[in-house]
Image (spheres, helix red, strand yellow):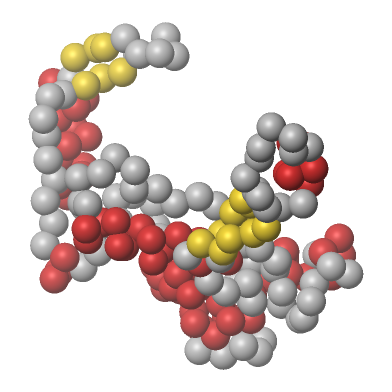
Length: 167
């Protein structure tokens, strides 16, 4: 964290004022880098206290593709019973309870979208005689595992500018 604080001080001491698209302006320094030895821990860049265990638990839960708030409790706290997560109020909300398929169901939250993205595709290829609107009202669906695809592209085309995850 000291590297981060040192960089902030360098920007304040040596930064040049630059115009930006917002008209507010930016302090900028050229070509600074921060390097971290990940064997010594994860470099969470923040000046605030971080609930690290909750962050890791939520990320693992997202990567798993779960929509079960109680599964998040299990990952983060080691039990499904008697603990609260950041998602508990959503799972227990009165506006959602009637829609939930099971206790703790959150629907298509981030992890579900990461691992089971629904892509609508035309049922048929349009031709000149086709009712174009009908084709889109009767689509087929393709399920995409965005994490798997992202890892595959990072491994096989690491310099691509199309590394993206939608949620």
